[in-house]
Amino acid sequence: MTVLTRTSPLFLAAAALAVGSCAAFAQSQGEVNLYSSRHYDTDERLYSDFTEATGITINRIEGNADELIARMQAEGANSPADILLTVDTSRLQRAKDAGVLQSVDSDILEERIPTNLQDNDNQWFGFSQRARIIFYDKNDVSEPPLDYLSLADPKYKGLVCHRSSSNVYSQTLLASVIQNHGEEAATTWAQGVVDNFARDPQGGDTDQLAALISGECDISIANTYYFARALRTDVTGVSENIDQIGWVFPAQEAEGAHMNLSGGGVAAHAPNRDNAVAFLEYLSSDQAQQYFSSGNDEFPAVEGVALSESVAKLGTYKADKVDLSAVALNLPAAQKIFNDVGWK
Image (cartoon, rainbow, N blue to C red; front, side, top):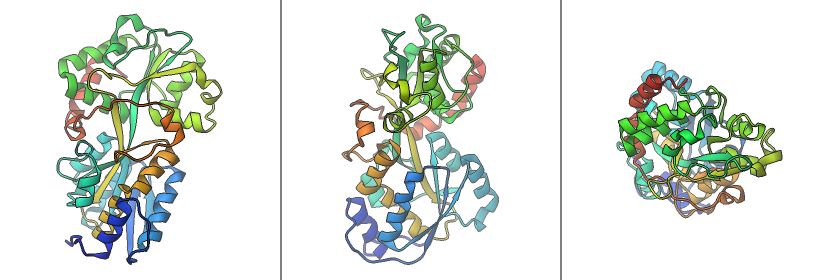
């Protein structure tokens, strides 16, 4: 297995990108095979700029995260995959547990990516974030919940919409509640939220926002980038009445807002390992971090990178700095709680 050195062209290229520079540097040869469940057209700039900077061609296979992980398992040592990119801590952990990732020793990633957004064994790294926050109908709710636990307050009975328990965002949020408050409190919370449902869990995050406008419910949870996208572009069922929706970054006097990750790691049997590491290092660059914000309304993982206008409109907030690698270990317990309380 080859390792990047501090004098290799790939390392120097990645280092230049990691501090935001696209100045000319040594062109590298070869390719990198990317398995990705990110389906955003704006990511094209990430790929084209990396290729322009390094000379490395990116070959992509896109699909559902679980299908890609299963494919990598089936391919085994013969897998052409160099990188897996996916969304949410639960899927990154699933890939690690499936044995399809390997540890990466990179000074650039260690310096650029906050420790709590990395796997403890350096098998995955977070490159962009979405805060999972509380949204509400300003016409009907004068005192919205200020933290996640308050969603279980009986005064919100019949007002809450949420996604299903099979959704990875739901699973990771509950896993973080377990990490921050313990299993007993997490179980009480989950039961209280179920008791407060306005309807059976259904739909995606955009559907939760649309339900606030349609009057199906008055309070919900969604990732910030869905709302920021509706501010920036026309999202049917949301944008035309978006002023009706208020939002709260939860737990600002406590642990802070729960963060979802989009991240990736190097495949266990990567045939182009050096190129794969260089690509991950590029994703931590100022340039790439700004693309995540401006192109897909996400929060950068790297501190100090400028936000896009749509993301900046959401305001400043305190993020939960809990170790997401530790949160991932609570996922089985979270699923058991969902089953026990009847969260469909």
